[in-house]
Image 1: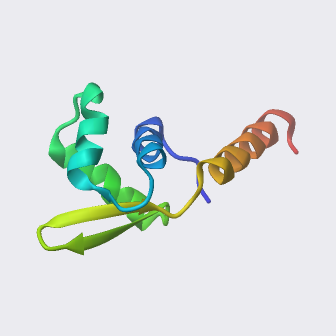
Image 2: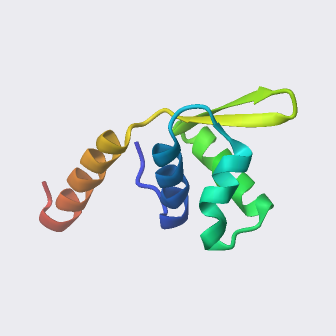
Image 3: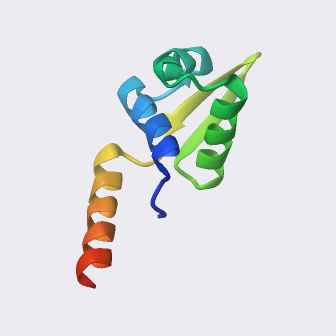
Length: 89
């Protein structure tokens, strides 16, 4: 597992709040306060899929996204990562 950049983490937070099989339109509404263009969101989603953090399922003309890493598991990983960087283990 790799530490996520802040922008990708914001996308994951929106997905964790929305739950499994989140439609793309609902995700864009949840991320609207950031002011990101649709292409920017698409880039983040593609990166997160490539990194194994979420899965994408196409149904008709819509994409549905499901987190593959739980928020708790990521927080645990991130906390250990920070402690290792600060204290060397």
